[in-house]
Image 1 (cartoon, rainbow, N blue to C red):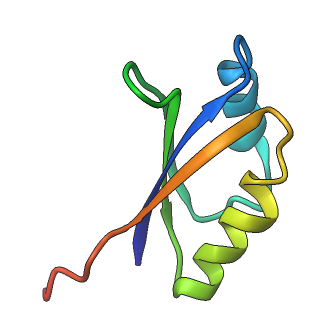
Image 2 (image 1 turned 135 degrees about the vertical axis):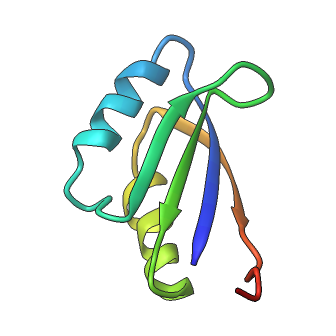
Amino acid sequence: MRGYVLFNTKPGTSEEVLKSLRESRALKGMVSADSVFGRFDAILVIEAKDLEEFGDIVYQVIEKNPSIIHTETCVALPSGE
């Protein structure tokens, strides 16, 4: 399964947060981590075997970062392929 985690950080910390997430061993399912313009500061693309593993990544790793102040998660629907 694939999901997208969009998040905002404390001002001036988005690049630092992305660097720490990219280096985190706990984010083995991370496909990409990019800074973006717009409503959010960054978007992570995560692939996991199931919703439980995806939730573990989001709640135990990403949301524990004190510089991340808001997350919005989008789980992709199966494509039927």
